[in-house]
Image (cartoon, rainbow, N blue to C red; front, side, top):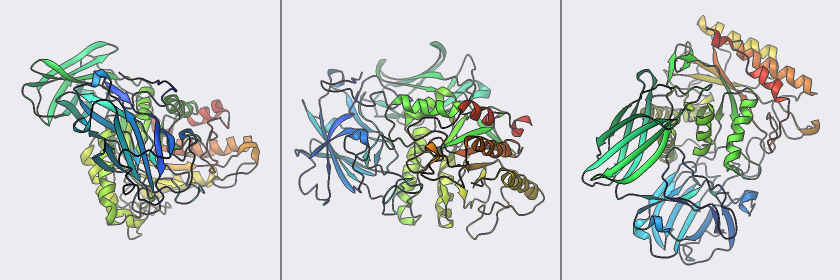
Length: 590
């Protein structure tokens, strides 16, 4: 259950935040909270942890920098506080209660009725605390203390500016920026679960954890296709490492052309009585590497990716609505793209849900910019990235991971550690240890580079020559494919390769020249189309490329090189753009 209205207003972003992990008994805590900027960092001394009204109001889940929050404050805010009250509905009475946060940037400390509940570090990962012991009858007070020091160099910030919005750094996000909700669970309940599809065997492997040690627990997994039962399995439930092999009566693959999803129900019983149920879904999809190819269910699919930074004029890092998350994918598809690099940001689960539903291929990334690569911060980085892998690894739309972007040689050690952790947590997908610049893996699975050359002829020549030279043992002109010592690495020969950033052609409204993009902007629309087609054709015609990533889907603040304006209006004839982008690639002909 949930309510999306109150006496005064409609609750923003009231849809369930986790369609991949749903329980019926939940309550959104989005909406009006008290808020205060703690400029002197003395909030604890002033008693803000309980019983103290804050000095203004904010609309959660929008960050205080955003217009939608009702505040729109753009200066640095290292310390901020949130406060609200809630009363439990009757359906939650007597249940174990979990308090969920989709994401809080950067360090969150949570108090309930004046008691310390828990602390979380990391601005992009979800977290929750059990609050059952802290609850009381009637109204309950929840307070969240947030610390966010974007300029410290000790925390990843992605494209958030440390000063003012300029160049390719944009407005910051401070504090709560994804949904907050309560969830009722049983005396024992289903925790994390990992789903590994096996399309060849028409089955899915499951690893499911259970919280709580109670006798006579049984775990039941059931799959459905359009409401028709496809398979069921029951096992005795243990504390952890509950393994189920769920065989399916009918095999229906997940592909970009036909993204079929099976519904999944996980039920926990104690002495026969249902004590917890989670609804989810999965797609029958596998990813393999074969020589230079990345195969999706055994098929070569050219990955026509677009760079998506996930910024919104009114919500900054938070989409104003669930509809806008879906519409951004549809905007990309209408331009001929079948996927995206989710760039320097970890997108919310609702976006990944729509990618699963719409057959959209995703490379998951981490906002590593802003972090200075010193060992002092390794622990926080590694812990958060691990949490993100666990949160997102069940999504069939995600076909690869890229935890770093445009890193210096000093990041080599951390990249290798994180790459290893990624493969351990998810052995089912390829990993690019960093997009562009310094690659240091001795045996990489996938390689890439960035190239913003705006001249189609030399752009084509460069990438054709790259593979001709490499096949003869020569040096590559891609100068940034180097190891820590600056030596050109030849370990990428024969591995899948893409140009993961290109284009970025400047085009401003009314051709005023405002903002910036890469290279000299075209003088007119026809010149833009010719340049766009020349750059895209150069990569589509290259049989060694498994894909590309064009910069970018939308303008972001002062960066004006999107196919759409920042407000999502199309800049160009999207039918014409789609015809250029979506034609068959040489890679697909082999």
